[in-house]
Length: 138
Image (tube, rainbow, N blue to C red; front, side, top):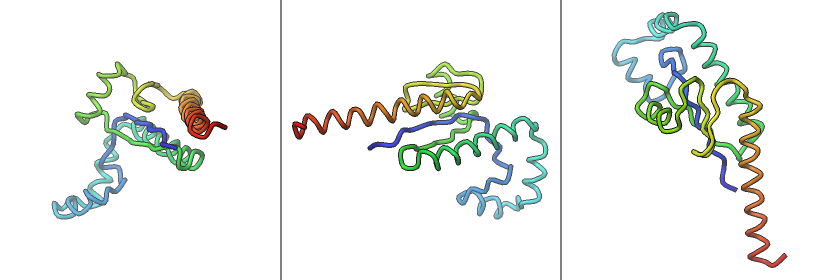
């Protein structure tokens, strides 16, 4: 069964201490140590930090709940890809959730988002059952 792709578009706080293995050596080479990044993170509005923490928490819970049936991709809203997806799907309020590139959800009603994910999982399971029946005549 193919995992359901959920793309999350939210403003990212790159200096917040979420260490990227690719970026950390670059930051260290440039002399941008951890203390400097912490000072930069303090300049971001508290609500941005809270929103990012909420997204990370939900993503961890969803991955443990759905296991192999879910793939999560977090996209920075200020990146070219994030801006393109927001324009393409006509989604302006943050956060934006795009399920399988077809259905969108904005805001923090995560139970509605999980219902959308469940619909895609059930639809995929039904399609596989139908394909199995057609192939084997059961």
